[in-house]
Length: 279
Ligand code: C2E
Ligand code: CA
Ligand code: CA
Ligand code: CA
Image (tube, rainbow, N blue to C red; front, side):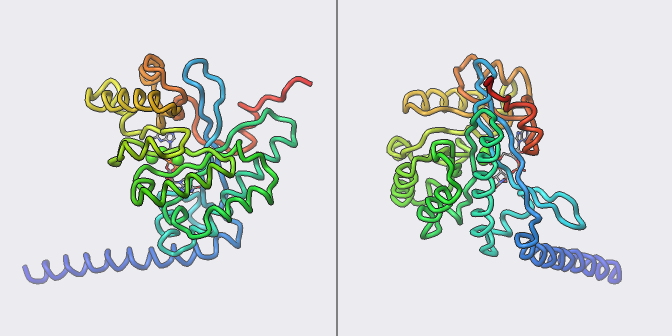
C-alpha cells in the first residue's frame, strides 16, 4: 500500500512538474514568436441578420508554432498577458489588421469594417490611446472602419477610467464594441454613459436558444436594452438556423458564427465575401 501511495504521489509530482516544464517551454517559444513572424490573423465575417449582407469581419490571432502547428489564442493570450508580451503583440495585431484593410482597398474590393480585440492588459496600458492613434495614422486607414472590442468584464472594472478611455478612442473616430456581453455584471447606469456602438451577446446565451428559457430571456433583454440605448447587437457563436430565426424575430442586427462561416484566411475571405465593385 505504501509503495502504491508513494507511486501515486510521484506521478502527481511528475505531472505537475511536467506542466511547469511545458509552460516554461511555451513561454520561451512565445517570447521569440513575434520576431520570428509566427503569428498570423484570420478573419471571421459577421452578417446582417435581416438580409444576410456582410457587416464586417473580426480579426482573430493564430500562432504558427514550428513544432506544435497552429496554436489557438485561448492557449497563449493569457500567457502573453502575464509576460507583458501582449503589448507588442497587440500592436502587431492592430497594425496587421489595418494593413489587411488597406490591401483589400488597394485591390479594389468593397470596403469592410474590421474588429480587433483589446486585451484587458492593453486596455490598462498608460499610452494606449496615443499608440492606437499613431498606428492608425501610420497605416493610413480610415478610423471609422475600425471597431475595437473590449470585454464587458474589463470595461466594468474601473468605470471612470473606462469612460475616459472610451471617450478618447471615440474621438479618434473608431467604434467600440462591448464583447462577451451578459457574462459580467454591468452597471447599467454606466453602460448608458459609455460611448459605445455595439453589444456583442456572449455565445453562452446563443447556445441557450431553444434549450433554456432563462438564456433566451437574457438575449431578449439585451436586445431590448440595446435598442433603448441606440446600440447595435451582435450575436456571436451562431451555429444553427433555429438560432438565426430566433435572432431575426427579435430584431438582432448582426450575427457571427459557424452557421455563416468559420474564421478565414484573408484570401478566402476576399474570394467569398469581398466582391469587386462594378467599375
Ligand atoms: P472572442 O473575441 O469572443 O472570439 C470569438 C471566438 O469564438 C473565436 O475563437 C471564434 O473562432 C469562436 N467562434 C466563432 N464562431 C463560433 C461558433 O459558431 N461556435 C463556436 N463554438 N465558436 C465560434 P478564437 O479565435 O479561438 O478566440 C478565442 C478568444 O481569444 C477570443 O474570444 C478572444 O477573447 C481571444 N482572442 C482572439 N484573437 C485575439 C486577438 O487578436 N487579441 C486578443 N487580445 N485576444 C484575442
Ligand atoms: Ca471578440
Ligand atoms: Ca466574444
Ligand atoms: Ca467569447
